[in-house]
Image (tube, rainbow, N blue to C red; front, side):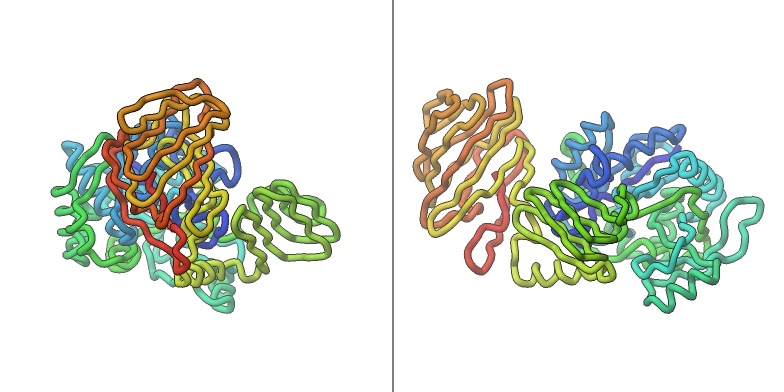
Length: 487
């Protein structure tokens, strides 16, 4: 039996400002109406005898994952990592869980959630070859034949040809090289890009982990064994989980095992790892520009221009990436596409909220958008999906004014329960229990004005919540602005 394992915990920092920690690239519809994560789920339907997938992702993204899985008409087990510990522990958790679900050993097809693979038939053929090798005890990784000297990928050197099978033994791994080394590796024709996709039996992987990283093996066993299950969410024990060091599957297992094998992928492949990679996947005009949104490009060449909210005009420029969002604008020389990660690190060190959130933030009940804020006030646009409701809660330091812009709201305010329609409003005093619910047939849109001496989102006592959330910690920037939102 083949059990897909989708690794969905990445942060996609090189695609900032479109990708944020709370809404990373794998959940964004970068190419079509569906996200990269949903395309990854969709590819599984072409593989015969696939069992229910296991998705391993961040606790912070649980509702994004669940909603996109629902939209894809899939059923998945979702393992929620309390924090990021690398791909080795993520796969170990999935392996332990899979062995507990089935009476016999299973094969695990490990796929990152953010890859673009256009030749589905070639992908399926490669997986079938990987199955044969894994059934013979190999720990398989899939390599990609390089099309150019790339410094943003790791490399795998092919060893000897596998006997009576497709693929090769693994001679060595090489981390992301400099340009001169990348050119040499490309010209040798014996190196493949490391795709981060794997196929092996659950028991074989865990045996290798026990041999090379004993502590991680026992951590995975304990975290799943002492964890909890809530519907489709599987929550490993946080105390056990946090004791484990951070490591990748390559370092922890694949570079140490004597049973490794690499099989070339029979398809084009792109991990959309940076803005220059996205350029290769989108239509270009006569001047090799990729223009998305409300864009005017004149006398400009070889640019990617992404307008999210406003008109963006580019005149007389070339080889640039220009990305506009509501709260940030990136202007980047394509030659420095990999350096966006360092920019994000700098912003994080400076406690900038733009690293984590867009102005529009998704929530299980809908979304909110920050419109304005200042001393003792904050304004938000709140959208509640049909049939959804916010938690029953109260605040100790702020009051709220609600104005319905569209739709019908059921408001709980203390002992009162009443309806509000368009252009009607209400006031929530400090310390009063309250709840907002959409009881209409259209999305409910509302303006919320908060006022008070302290507007931090940790000023919340949640009394009842249909999504199973608890009060969450909130962080603040140095100027006191809220960085997280827990409604």
